[in-house]
Length: 478
Image (cartoon, rainbow, N blue to C red):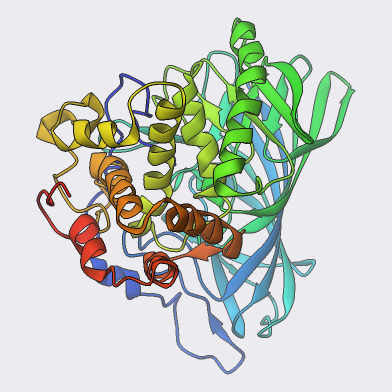
């Protein structure tokens, strides 16, 4: 992730991304309206996700987002322009974008004014002329308004969230649509350039590298470039009275933004981050992005950390294990990204297991001891509120309310430990490095991981994965 609404290492309750039940059949309802019109047809209004079928759109693939934002913290007003470069995957008479709230002022396709209509969180754009299949086209959406905070049924918060000294945009799983229009499903990744103008004295932090900073007329503009593919749920903008600390992890530039009063945490992070990145690089292979860093905020509305790409967001100073968790996501989740939200365990199991390995490295419990504590219910992180624990449901078949619950994190990490014991250390770590190398910047499904494990180990592992990931109840300990 977002990691849970209890992020590992914290005492808050576990995040369960509660959503109203959505019939699975809706995942396959893709018509944007109308049939073939002779000059193309509307793109789908769904990416077909099995957990969040209303997310995403079809008929095109986004290649680049150019976001230009002007934000006024004093009245929480956002004015934006999104320039979306995409390639049509069919002849398009119309297509849709995900956008929650915010008033659309103008839409253009290929430089010409386009008609728009809205229903719920779908913004339908109808260009003057159909877009041909395989054609690259540019859509410009100008918008304005008060960006919305998105509240889950259980009180979890995402979207655009005001803080003590500014605001932050957080996206997992669907909050990004609260501050920019786009194809908000992780299966459609793109490069980003994000330009943010804020009042002088504020800093705007986004993904990637800071290319330019200029103050003029009482305002400061920050230009950020993220050249590697990124899913929209890990795109982020944080605005505040941040102090900036710069450092390096080998050749990798570090950018650390800390809220007022958190200077000591920033200095400590400047020492911890290089250690964590060096260790994780040794385990997983080269760090996938051009820069790294963190945002350390002071945010009482958000009770979790989020693995926003290149700079994880922490709502308060984190402990080392939480840093390990969120940085592991840069490999598992951000570079190698799930294609369907049902495979959330592919993100969270690896990040949780990285925490366990770090604890062993630092002289704490061995990974096997942590496994045993989880199995026996002795570790507090194996349990949750209302009786939920890591055995409450299978981690590979969650619904929207279960997507970030204990089984997706803890039981998936336990599976990885059992896999390691089954195939041996050499094969296990070869699998991890091969996985992130072969799928770098791509999207994946669980079956691809299963096939890789079997190919590398020479073992039939179907029953093993079925037992640990798909079966209800408590598997045998070993």
